[in-house]
Image (tube, rainbow, N blue to C red; front, side):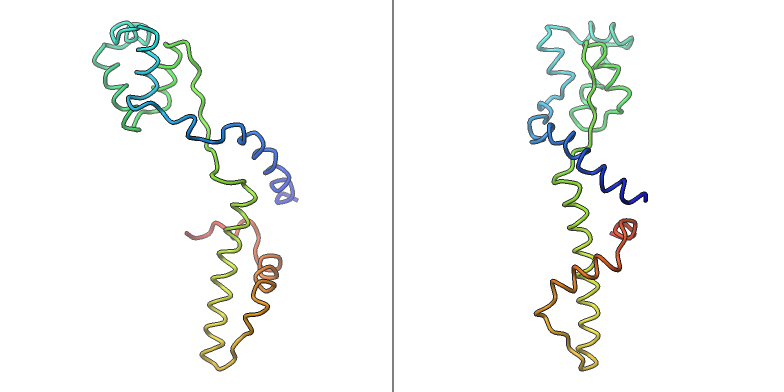
Length: 153
């Protein structure tokens, strides 16, 4: 089953991404990586421009767009290659992928069960809050699939 293979794949992906934690280790310098590396190598903007095949003014624009977070990946990759570097690109989850799935399912189940409880209270058929956690778990198990988790915000 496809969801089973996704479930088995999440821990492997989490393990690969764990080496990138904490992500603040990779926070770009204030003027960006291109400028920081170029300066550290003692390379002028004109010299980097020659290596990339662009004018010095374009190098300045590249550095400013990187610092602003608006640079295109292919431009950053070209600059990295000209600096004898490798561009590394990753999306690093803030928690484990399984925790993201569980939190999302819990949020949906809790919202739906509170909605049902509210309707039942209006009809004078209140529900017992004591077993709410078990109802949340049952809702997640019986009513939600992974695909249902992302249908809405």
